[in-house]
Length: 309
Image (cartoon, rainbow, N blue to C red; front, side, top):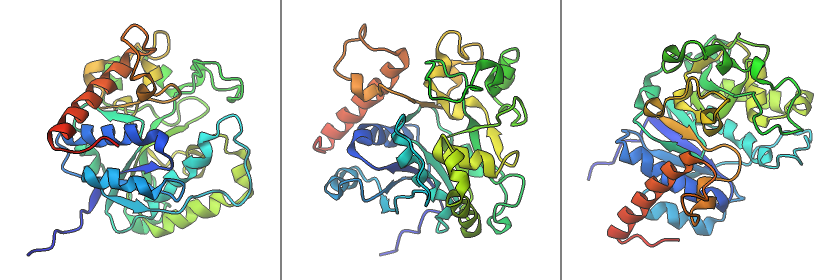
């Protein structure tokens, strides 16, 4: 029997606890539903119970154990404990068994095929992070619409890269804002397009373990924004469409439901937290999209005889 070749291009997603497992399963289903040619590989840390790996195996989701990354200097994330887990999202830069990795957060939902990200031009691995197209990502929205008091004071709509596109919504569907727009040039780490490189990874880890880590309020995305300032490829919002951007008065001037390829359910509550609520009680209309895909997933699994976990 012929041995199946190792895929050279993959999606990856990180999981560190069971709270995000519903999101991961529905993310995988959405990629398959939209006929992606590439598998989703789950990167799990020792904080994820190995007893739950059978849930992934039953659904044909490959998985790989990775180390739980933390800086050698302690950064206090008491206000946002989720950021302790986020350092491990730097791992895709080390996965040199692949030619291309597109990292996705587990609280994402693919709404349209986006396999074109596997062919996006980036620096070759041998440049080791010294080139001008080290990785690709979407901008962070720095509007702080929930007015979180511990967010930086300069996170205001006037400084947000997406605000610069309000008068050109057609362009916003196709072109990411220039990283030089506004004073921040800050990425959202939810989606990263990477050509893995050991040299690039070592550069990242050395930076993570420096005193600079004490300044990184947003963990991995702070590090990447600082270390590779002006040397990353900005993607249009459609590939990492933060659900808050759709809200009236945030970036609804550029948001178009029919163009979004991948929605990112940032912040709480997550769509699966509201799964038992009726439509009127759901806090965000876009959560209903996730619930529709999740229902399809469950129906498909039941038909295949796959047990709910």
